[in-house]
Length: 214
Image (cartoon, rainbow, N blue to C red; front, side, top):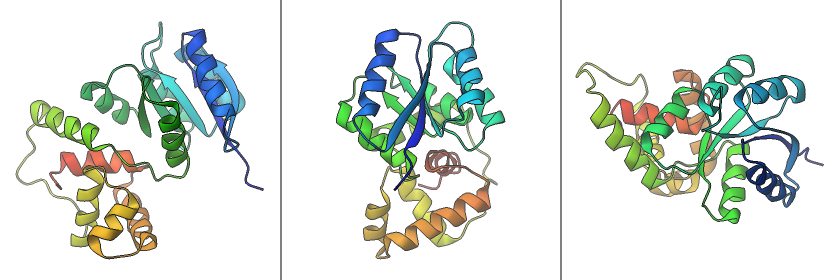
């Protein structure tokens, strides 16, 4: 029997926490192991409950969700943190990725979309949505001009895969585009993550965009 993914819910609004807990309870893949209402509490509960995933609100008094994410990842690098917010601002997305987040959820999305997304995060298969990928690219162009000498230490095939990751393609879509199996795509992703010292698919997308692998 597969052990459920242990999830910590952190939001400064009680009703939001209840809604997320009720949603998680609908799927046996997830087990809510605690609730917090601040960044400081998130840090304490992460130490005590050892969750595998944290749903983290951004805007909280005191230590906000982004700073809490950075602090928790420093202590528990393997935990998957999904930022939960009402904003789809690319600046927030960039900030969350820099702090080590594995995903980004908008509060007004359909509940079934939440579960599908969280399952993908739990399985390390979450694609970056095409809309968010485009927002990231626009934000990057506005924020930073990369040196012409920048390059990615990856093979031509790995660059192809990184390009599709940045466009929000799933493993199946990448396999179809490149005429290879999904298993081969997963192996390539594992190798790329190891080579670039990155933790997840979202960080790969950010790497591809920053290095113009598009």
